[in-house]
Length: 309
Image (cartoon, rainbow, N blue to C red):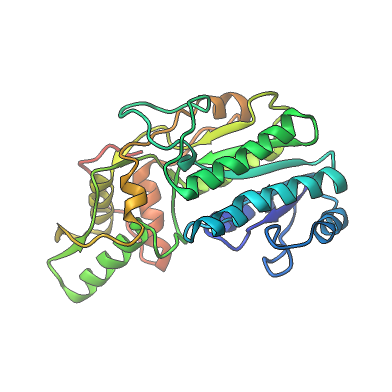
């Protein structure tokens, strides 16, 4: 059984990662107030890692909203600090970092993007994640630390942040059904996304803590391997919920520009199968059912019209 130090256990991904890891070993989850690598002094962080004596450190902490400096602190500074602390206090430990598909930037429509595709992020968020990924990759290649970066695509499931498009759509559908409204107005760009179940993400993290040496294949995509039009995803959610009202064009949220800048995203997950022994287990309909049930409302309706995944 391994001893894992998990940072960011209170977040959307972190809660599911914690559940998966806790079934297979000891998981230590210091709060952000007690352990924030972006703001702690390096000696303090190093001492904390030394006290925990982890076999694996999983960094699932970060930000999805904020300014450029916010993202740099949350992703780049935090990763640099963590690499230094783990290399000194637990040099035999593996560091697993949760990265983002935003690191790729714009990719050709129809392409399932592999890890060796040139990374050219179009946002400060994606750029900060890429810089942090490069730090982890350099540390691993230099032999300072055993590092793995999981580039997570668009996770979906219970506990999604309120600002997420699917979380907004779910709340709007619930309200419309409760009020007897005949439709909702939701701003949707003509984008395609690879939506991966958050439980599959957690399973990939578990696999990354347990797999053998990764060699030069330190960056691993974690996605479903399928892209679905955003409009179809929302319609599938409505079908899962049993909502028959219209989905009309509406206002876009403040963060919509970042999403619209990347019209297509789909993961090539072959490396995950080879290196981690992992493959996604849930289709998109199952993920959306889990999201809809999050407030305790079951939905076992058959879904038609959109290919799951």
